[in-house]
Image (cartoon, rainbow over all chains, first blue to last red; front, side, top):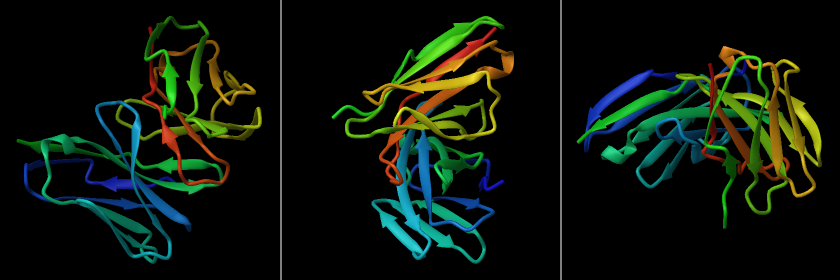
Length: 109
Length: 112
């Protein structure tokens, strides 16, 4: 299976702290994407990092990719209560996404 | 610019019944994919439609079928519902071979 796995499964932090979640995958990729899901709703695309990139920033988000270790990390800086959600990494194989099991982030005000 | 629209938002069905879920893609998108997300899990790919044909299928039984219409909207049909079919069903639209997928808010199906 190409499916990624996120770590940790759950994370609880205070508002203003940074949150880091990790993702591992199994096969070669062209890119890796991170999505957010609020309380069982739809997925919102956060950021895409290509296989030839090592780091990418978007606002308070920082994503790294290590293709030699087949892993990626998502860092959310200065977290807010509104960041409370589940976060998924996804790789694209053929025409389908392979999602991990997600990290549930709780930001305590 | 409307995003992906799914209907209904919630649905309760009885075991053995059949259900149809609907998806209207984002304007300009012609490819529709369907995913099943069980509680506490990541989404699992069901199938993708392009040019009114099923282009790729995941590991789901034939009870799951779909259709794409000329206006690119799509339906997901599930026959002989099982309790295990209870899940959030997500629709995503895109252009072919494009990384820019847009997901809808999903249909929450409960089978009792």
